[in-house]
Image (tube, rainbow, N blue to C red; front, side, top):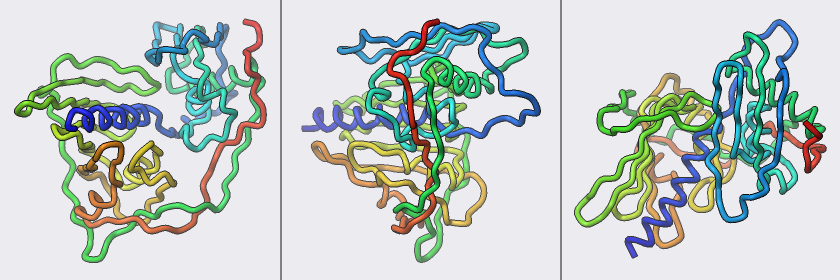
Length: 297
């Protein structure tokens, strides 16, 4: 039973890690026209029926190589939003894209979203619009008795060897470690440079999930809990209404039994927070049109 629980928890954890690498971003200030790739080759990877390829973003000088991401993930990066906030055709969650491109002189990685946005319009004839409708949400608020927050901490990177750059649109560094806890194996992933600050994801010896965020704001915590998952997540947008400023150290633990994980509610209760059902405007990106095959290179 423990082995089964650990395997299921690891599958949930991998989904959380994937979500960690797809943050909403604010576009950099720009006074001129949005940058576009000088030249670009775009292909759909159709040979993925029995595999999930590694998603990578590689920059070498002005050359950009992007592969393994679904079309929907590329759309999220291009429009600086979250995947779960996009209403798009089902095929965009399955088809993966390979892009080889040359960036214009002086362009930086921070401008990749704008270049991808132009590429989607040119090659997929993508048309989209944003909505901000009142929807059911959870509000993150302070519980009765007040918050019990821990001060931020630094991540001790010496606890894990073999740090390397991870794939994605952020400058994330990651390290995986495996240790024995009695007769059980504990799998841990550490990361720095991501959207939520230094993070430790762990599947504990009994198959439960532990997420540790060492320097995280309330807005980041709300966004983190907004990410949907198969088991135990709130699966509704979460908005920060705590009024608490600054970064803090959060530990979110969830118990998984067989194929079910509990929610974040008990972890929030331990630190003097809770969520309440309410409504709020939620901005979503709606894809009006996208060709299933990119135009010729």
